Image (cartoon, rainbow, N blue to C red):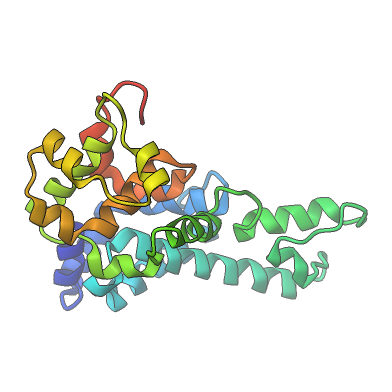
Length: 243
């Protein structure tokens, strides 16, 4: 598993380099999603992203949840810092600080330039990782769940992750899908999930927050966050009309 590989590589430079080499294209795709650009290995963003993942490996522990979402936040922060620094030191472009907060005046003569900086900084669209996290936090608040609680309640072992994936899959197994009821009742439909998945109640109770969050992400408008639930998506991909 990725989390275990990262931890094992923290004190072994050869394993670390091997991991970074193996995940090279994944890092590049992640950086491209964050910057909303099609990047190549010759772009400066690639170097920043690679260093960010390397540093994320050094500081990672399992209390931070799965590795890739954590690395994405580190990468996003580093890339934004790079664009801010470039904007401050460029004699050719004058960029107001508001551009990095998502506020641009359409009457500004440099409107298109400001928009480009916004795009680079990852604040231009509703589907940025940061904004998805903020939107999800609001939705989770109705369930008494904090997004940052998930580091403590995410499954770590492979067998447990598989069991949780099967429980989440049960949300989308007709008839009928259970997510609508989840949103109405604000309660995990444990009895129905167990009937559909044959997974133990102990798992459902222990990972209640994780199961609710995963179902909401996969059913909602959270494309970037959904990318980090690939092992669950693989389980339910065969369900017609879903992912």
